[in-house]
Image 1 (cartoon, rainbow over the protein chains, first blue to last red):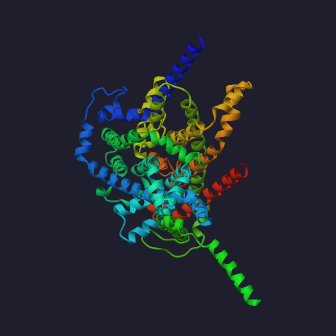
Image 2 (image 1 turned 180 degrees about the vertical axis):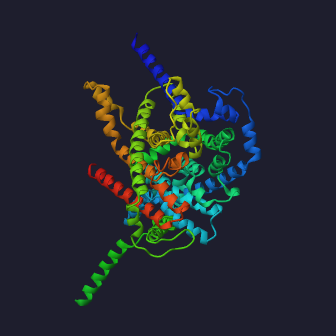
Image 3 (image 1 turned 45 degrees about the horizontal axis):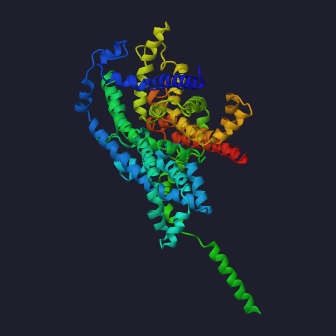
Length: 278
Length: 303
């Protein structure tokens, strides 16, 4: 075998290895999707991997007989709200952390890191009592605010890493052209941050859309449930109805999946931003 | 003479003042974050600590009891149990997901056809809602008709009730945790791998280094700083993880998979004992802070 052929064999055997690994890793998801097209009795009795009598019954049940659509709308509102607010606050804070090195700013950066250690439950206990006195339990607002803050540390550090990579010269040039510091940021630096904003937006949206604990504590009326809480109800109410449960789970992951496919290329960027910074 | 001294000292003072003058611009930009963090993190931090010193319920504040809740915790077996399980869960979860993530990152860093597709497909466990992953895993391992037991049966192994005994439930929950966390490790490590200059490897191979030696003496040391950060983050996330144990096993069977977060939730929202729940949460935070500070100190000392 020539060197070229050896390399070709190596490349394609790695390809096969990766294919096997990807299949094994995604087996729970694959079987979930396949099961969503089977009746519950078939799921419980059949030993075949593929559906023997494929059916859309489960999907019909979930979309017509449950409040799934409402839950999805609630999820989009709350995840979207948290995403928008956290990006607004975190672009500003990330910029400050990147450009200013005063004692106050440094202290803020350290404090933000420490906040991540905060068990969310410790915050939820007083906030539940606090929000109840304000009448904010069972409203979108309580959940949106919590989603916003939960993402701030991560979002801020990603923006900081991104702004670190933008040369200060650009702002200096803008200042010479007569822009003030705020304009230098909003008109020169921020327009360059599109990819970073997209990356943070995915992370923020995914976090909120997938989140369970905060929503389960603050949303106690069915018409306000997010998708994860709704599905959790499903497990309790229809404990043996695996078919509908799996169809609901597949529907729940669709928005995540679609969004992820559109913007997955930024994810690598996001990991670089948050990771290499260290 | 005296006038001259006064004027010179006042001009010095002015210089000092100008140098010390607080630049308000960065603070203005931080205001939204500061308000949110004060309201949602600092206030509950103080209030949570205060609640941990009381014997209140969710509906009314109770009497001040000092450290009684903490002393009470120390004598409760479920607290010791949660402490032990949290440690096991974090340790195996963090290193398991780091090892799996590193292995896959190394593979993805090579020239494989369809690399982009594989990278995306391997991120799926991470981006899925926790409830979706847990539903699929519960079916996979839940009872004897689940996929794993069908496959085991194919090899003549008797069905294992993964969620019914303490040991198997602990094992299963760690596997699910690794499954949900490795993509983040993989992505971060892959990003770090791609910043390592190829020239170092070329130089090493000219000097006769084996692939294993290149990995051991170039790749691993280059990945150490990011790995330390990932270990810290993942440990914090594991100890604070409520969803994986709660949705998979509800902390059962008989509290075998109850970590500190689930215990705190159970005390507060199911047993309505805010004092004990807050004490568990506060104690958890103290442990995590000490842990992170020690690791960060270490890392800063060796640049």
